[in-house]
Length: 149
Image 1 (cartoon, rainbow, N blue to C red):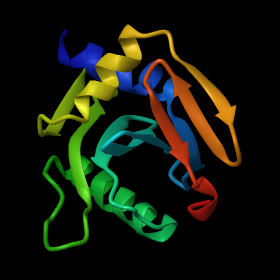
Image 2: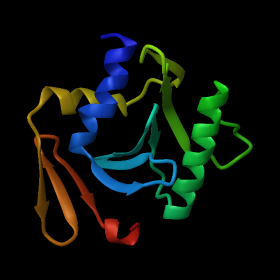
Image 3: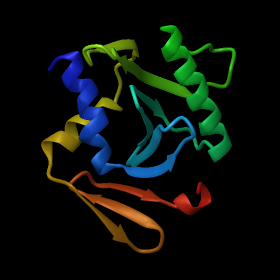
């Protein structure tokens, strides 16, 4: 798999198995995935993708972090650790001329299994009890989003 396939996969395929939490002012979509021992945020902007581990972020915190991540991407650097940046693990933006991605940061970790599991299974996002969504096939559950929303 090449960098473009990985980038495009997050933008168009993996997010179909995630919960869309918010559309931000910069037209980025904020997605959440929660599973056993792993929760991540994925931010899909008009020309970018950021993946970060979730740390129980509040709505205000994640919105502020998205701004920091996007600024770092536009500068071609990893986010400044002196700020509260959360734990971003993948950041890429596309070349607006040919669509090829520029990967600005990449830290290998268990977050990548979400990509592989989503593309290798036919998963269904189904509503279960309360304000809870279950992804059948990934054995993942996203619950208590009402506290975030």
